[in-house]
Amino acid sequence: MTHEVIKHLLDDYVTGDLTEEARPPVEEHVIACALCAAEVESLRRILARAAELPKSIDPPADAWSNIRSAISRDEAAVRASSSVSRPSIWQRRYVLAAAAAVLVAVLSSAGTALYMSGHYSGARSNQAIANSSSAEGTPATLAAFTIEENNYLRTASMLQDLLDQQEASLAPATVAQLKASLRTIDEAILEARSALARDPANKLLLEMLSASYRQKVDLLRRTTELTRGT
Amino acid sequence: MKTSAVVSDTIGNYPSTSAEDKAAALERVRHAQTGDVDAFEVLYREHSPRIYALCLRLEGGDTSDATELLQDVFTKAWRRLDTFRGDCAFGSWLHRLTVNTMLENARSDQRRTARVLPMEDTSRLAGAARSSGVESRMDMEGAIASLPKGARLAFVLHDVEGYQHQEIAEQLSVSVGTVKAQLHRARRLLRERLES
Image (cartoon, rainbow over all chains, first blue to last red; front, side, top):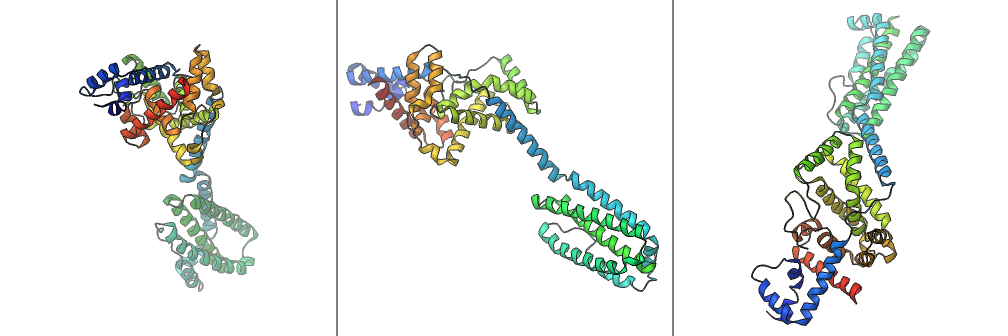
């Protein structure tokens, strides 16, 4: 091997990375060549100095507190994320909304009875309105649900108009209870909607939002039946 | 510095430990994996000086960047603790995470890769060198910090930390030949700067 070839092998020679076959000719050349011998010595000094460098250096004292804070922020973010996946806050509203719907349904039992038996002439038209929304099942995706949601909104709006016209026929306490129940359901709808905006793939949220709309439509429908029955 | 004697569960020249120590270390990691932050702090206290030294050298002696990298590494380590299976030493796992994090940061911030660090940024390294009583280490740290990034990474990982060519090539996603070329360049530059 020539000097030109060997000088490119000196790094591997010094670090012991040369093969068994390559090492002897390089060793012989280094003994004979002052230039390569000097380079080998220089490389060894550099490697020795590298080996002497401290392997441990104390980090700044406040580094751990910053890491601890980052961990706390992470945990808070995970908790917030979990609350979106498991919507405990508005889930409670959903339960309240359901309770409100049941309460008004009980108040309107007479109207319901009329509705169910078909004695009241307006029942059929209201049923048609209610049926225009889908009370059966929940669309699998938010996109599909958005179409369904428009039906709910239209139906609720029509029922609300009917109810506004007939409100005078209801007892003030019933009207107050009805409005409070509708507010609770509307809040549940709003919260579910904003939770879905953050987590559009969450099927549980979708089902609960759909159920809230169904409750609202059902509540409005039963109350309009009650007004017609009184 | 040949690293052929590296034990199977370590990378670089991270100190190997007895079976008893390994079991105790693994136990500490298991505690941390259950969400015990105090146990994780024990791991931090144990490993952070070594990781910080690596961070300082990878970041060319810039204490601010090195501290930021250290914090990134341990925050990531906490998040990814469940991925540590005990197949290698926890310290080796942290080392790998440190290099990967530095590379990720560099990729997301091109300014870092282009920056040539000034010698005065090596104050922390210089302090460590002085405290060890060997003045020449200060010059050595400064010279390493002044190396071009690729050469510095290869030199720090191979000649200071004891990684093998293949390990460095895999971590940096380059060929072994490129690693050797960068090492040759680093050593040549260091010799010029320290011995001329």
